[in-house]
Length: 320
Image (cartoon, rainbow, N blue to C red; front, side):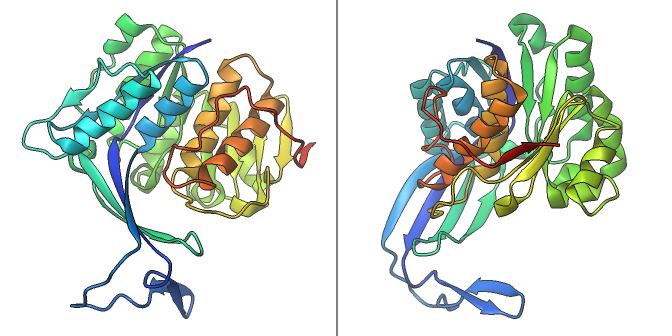
């Protein structure tokens, strides 16, 4: 098994779950929670306290797969931070590199979830997960990981570059799943891609980095910067190429979505968890799809994450 560092956010997710008051109402091309009126009191069915954030979700995914998972992220000395530490400890994730920030609260999300449709709106206060400049890539010297897995650092391109350059220098492979803030800085992002071994984005994100409309176009253009690229396209599946193989894949299973939170994290970390365990590129894509399907079938961003030894059924996947 591999040693994998997850660098990213840590959040407590507080779910407000209801079957009718949070039911979305369509207005034009948009949908809103139509029965929640300003100034009103709304009774909901239940509250569920979960943990999430890209760094936490991926670290749990790696640990469940049997890898040595190390989490780099910021929390605060508050109940939400303790809940995150407890969850990571329970999963066997190394939390010795967690930083506690003063005068900050642990990042928290309020998830308004319609239990009937699985649709949700997320209100997030990033808190301690708003910044990452307190982390030094020199910590990688002591850990000597095989992989560095990075989700959004809220547009902190300086810290990203420091980690990517240092990882490259040490021979550490890097997988990157950029967020909105990184995509907003597209020119700086493209400059970073030469340090990345695996890039994981969805179709709309890919189209913000390179020109193209079709998945094949986007993959071709991104492969000019990164050897291995995975582009997902929601219910349409996705496409992936590593320089020698290209696969067009569908979804693993047409299942009812209970909660879509964490689906992207489950796919990306699922791919790396399987691939770093020695599985083929093709089979790692299948596992990634299965991992994402398992997560959306349960409440919370990581409760449904697989362990890697589950029997998997065939899914639509074609080598191009």
